[in-house]
Length: 357
Length: 239
Image (cartoon, rainbow over all chains, first blue to last red):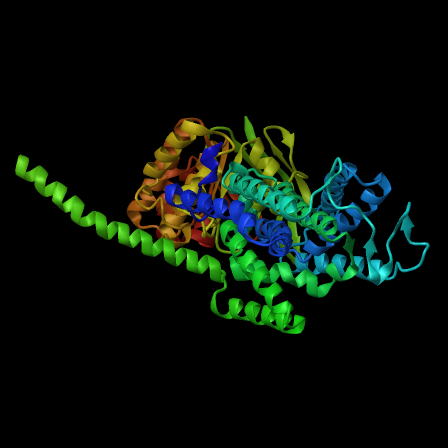
């Protein structure tokens, strides 16, 4: 199983890569010991969005399905968490609310994905249909301000958004601040490692084969629709995980977290980072979220404009993504250096061998 | 015994009838060549057999089972495998991974790796196994696709112009490869223009013309057929 961590579908492998990975992880684990609680909370907030980015990377970069629907599933799970947490009475039940809301998002993805994929929708039309679903949900939730829009005691509240749900809680311990940060780190490691194993497995082989040439993949005996649906459900479920965690973090959710500007964000993160690689997406999305949040403190409009400029720059200058491009340059440089270092050593060895004979 | 039985199959694209009321039987264990001038409907008939096009009328049987309504992947799982006319490999993936994807349904672990190496050596692609498939020459891509089709160990191998873009030596080698697999019991249906190749491999020939069966029989009978010579081979070429 561990062999699947390194494979043809993921950049970065071997001792050096995993040593760097462990060093970064160790840094992340000791960070709360040195940082103040505000910064730790902020970092936890950035990390919440990483799942959505990784899900899109799986669907778009590996599966070839550009989904504009990440915030659709984010919203379903986010509102789902709120409704369930309020109705189930908070406390430890919030953990069940988190799990159930992600499952609901995955079921929704299964239904939407089934009709799209079995209906033969692909390419740009896949993006159009998922965007339409996202906009419909955002508009629908925006008009739920009246008191008649409630599920049990949970009111949807229209544009003002839903509030009043408990954060994730175990017994009487609220998972907030540093605890939430550590939960995020643990979940990201689990999701990242699981996705690496998935894309490097035989299932991952079929997922990328379907992206490359669905007809050829089918002519090798694979029902490509099932693999596409699996990819869509997993990717959308990860968006749902982001949504449920977001609601539990802030104890509110509004339709604006689903609408068009929000729906475009994951596309920018993943395109800028490099959609064809999980590590590039992980690193790039974190950097962008950090930069976006820093600029938003001064001007939200400026941050949005910067995102637009970055998307344009990516399309024009580095269609495969900036972070992935830089990563490949580093790998190429390292490989060339090693070959250069090995060449004289090999020459010496062969000279020694010929001297002995 | 018939492995493939095409009964009264027609395919219309709007006002164009590409295949018209075709009956074709491919017996188990034979190398059957489908020849005809450009536009005769050979590739369309291939795509009908493999399920890429649904027929307008008629039925297709594989191993006595009606597969007319089945999707291509289900037909492949029954034991068909196809090499398309234009190279249809996974161009952005390494050569080795192309072979792996074709093999992994049937084999796993050490067995899969052994078969992978055997096929790469057989296809003369061992040295290029790390290259992206799209970086191979046209002929090498043809070989790779043939290898992917063979990796499934099909009962019926469908080859649509397998030697296009190959040198005479490569063409001959492909013919010998097909004959060796046929000797092991694989049934092969080939569309081909190269008559030297057809002579090398064919045991039975069907001639298509304007979407209809024009003639069928043994290699010698077809080559002696004056009408076939007129529509396709050219009289001097036929004799």
